[in-house]
Image 1 (cartoon, helix red, strand yellow):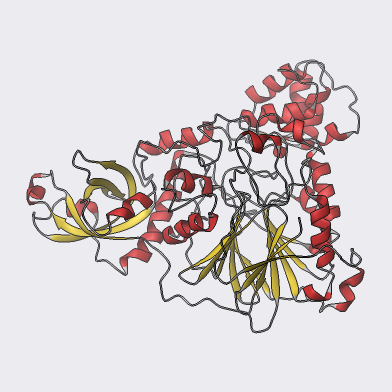
Image 2: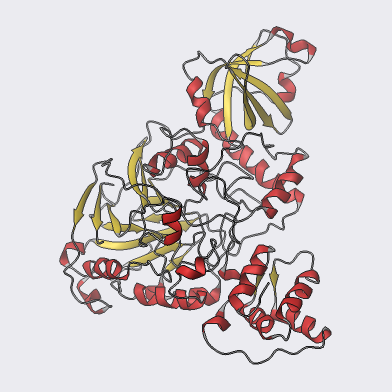
Length: 574
């Protein structure tokens, strides 16, 4: 491949599963034979390394007898392998979109089976997801929200207006679930087993309060005809010749087949199941269970779910938060004028109660995220993209507390949970002492728990489930499914990459008061068992790539949340 720019080196390294120090990329770009130097650096990388260091590259260049030539200080010299999160992808229908082909084969639950190895390899080798897909604009008004056009006549920007506000940055904000600096996974088999064991342990605990479950090893020894219950991960789903559903459930002691008859009242719940999620079933064992060929005829099926009686917490004063995502600075289609109208509106008297800005990922457009993306970039260097984003952030009033997490276009690892940005990028985005956390994270603002998740798994949920259960037109319904499953990315080995950690950071142990996502570039909101689910749209108009795959984004919207009532108003600045 041609290696004339660091950006191309970044893309090639990413396609091989490596990140690199910024200086390492510069050294490779300045080598007499960049392609040969890259090959040697990758081939001789330590077995446990995911990031190539500058020292490693220097040693390779010295061994090869080559020295790096001077490289300009222009845009290209600032790229590094953390700037690209995915190489060009293999599309299945619509890339990352509703046209994706649903999986037809089962996946092991990874709680101890040998299939974990294959699943881990598949996850490591699978290509990255592409641009956030979306479809038609949505006009639904759920949860008492309203839409208004304003924000076009604004006062001065910058920090000057901050003195008219209540300066805070007080302990009213708390962040939980931040994996930044805590990542321990090495990609070994045992790491994948551990994360799935932890998932099963925590979600099964939520279900055992409702059913008297037995391990599958004990169920196999029970006499036929008796009643029992099982808590397990969904490892396979298939239909029988008569149209019934056979669900294979796996726990730490084995697997057991469970049959859902098509005429049962809850049979349509099978359409909502994803591989690797944890559910509970109750039913009657077949008469031949003593012979080792038994099956459980399911009478009831349970999800971990949000209790219908759940009552969210609210602030004890009238204060608001703006929920946004997918800013995509660096794209030719970034809506700078709309952003400035929004930022200027925040300086007005009408917005004086907006004291928090929560950004759910994709601050910048990134580099090499989808095929031919470089043709749609206004800023081609990832560091310059973040510097430009920081300048736009300066337009926000100085006393607005900013909390942000990364997304799949940002310069962090693609696998979830995604740690917050490294120190260099944090320094660039240090405007207003912004809080930077991992994806996902639960942010407690004025006593209200807001689960912030960029939302990459929404693509998978929408692709796998029937349209009436999850769609891009109504992204909040896909969010309902994640709340029901109490996990932000339940299915492993598909579109959403999951990193093995010592615990599953993607489990919802506690019910959030607000669930905030982005990623799909669609605006949607509603309440599920009293939890407000908000997908906040984007600040990027339709790109050529989005047009080619029929993506029509909802851009330039800012949901404004009343933290004391959890009512919401959506303001449009586009």
